[in-house]
Image (tube, rainbow, N blue to C red; front, side, top):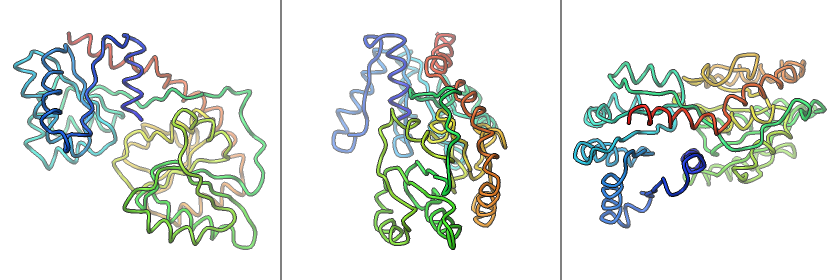
Amino acid sequence: IRSVSIVTEIESKLGRDALCKVDYTQWKKKPIQTFYAFVKLLLHSENVIIFPDLRAIYALVPLGAALKGITDTKVYYNVIGGWLPGFLQEHKVIRYWTRKLDGLFVQTRILTEQLRAIGINKTTIFPNFKRIKVYTEDKLRLDFVKPYPLVFMSRVTERKGICELVRIVNKLNQGQPRFSLDIYGSIETHFVEQFEKLKKEFTPYIHYKGQVDPLKTSEVMHNYFLHVFPTTYRTEGYPGSILDALSAGTPTLSARWQSYEDVLTENKTGISFEMGNWEELERKFEEIYKNPEIINSMRINCLKEARNYIPENVINIMLEKINAND
């Protein structure tokens, strides 16, 4: 979604004729054609932005860094998520080639600090953004009633904390229903069987609702009292679901990952608990249930924060950096 968003905004600013795209997802089936397309891109472009995942980084970074010296093309790396510093610390060869790139766009301040600690200095903070509806104060919902509706919107996998979240909601609802929970997102392939077992634990107050249109995420979030993000990935970057929630005026109850403070402000746009401390998460739910105004008081702050991520403004960060290097 982030890759598509960036390409869409660049096309909006510069026009489609200014942009050429190569999709490397078919490289296993068509390795020669993909390699040729990438080389052709470097030969005929002034600037190239690569979006490698954990598998493609082994090819795109060394190729881009090596060939740019021949083609005189500038190559930039748009980093998605927060896994890169740890990866580069362990993979010295890729770290060597990464240093030779013309710049990296990272989502948070903590990622910049971690990369600089291992000698990657050409970084620019480039936060997450989406072209979705950002609500106004007069459209905020404050009329939520018990059981308070919770929303989980992310990849559905064990490491996102979904199993524990379901069990905690079930426990809190014993005796009387305090919260309901709707789960949205694609189910990871390796988690399908386990999720089917988990669904047997669903009470009438817990539902899986499938995937959401990426352009309608904030409109779905708007219908919920609270967004819950119980991830156990310490290397999250700027999770898209949190931006969805901010745009909807929906505060987030989240595990504290490495970049938490770069994304949410405690008691203003979100409430946090120690990652993996499920007893603390349960206590946070109990506090919120007793005093729901804790959440309602943060809704305007969420909308104000969301306005910092208007797509046409954020994309300028990338374009101005690239123009400055020309």
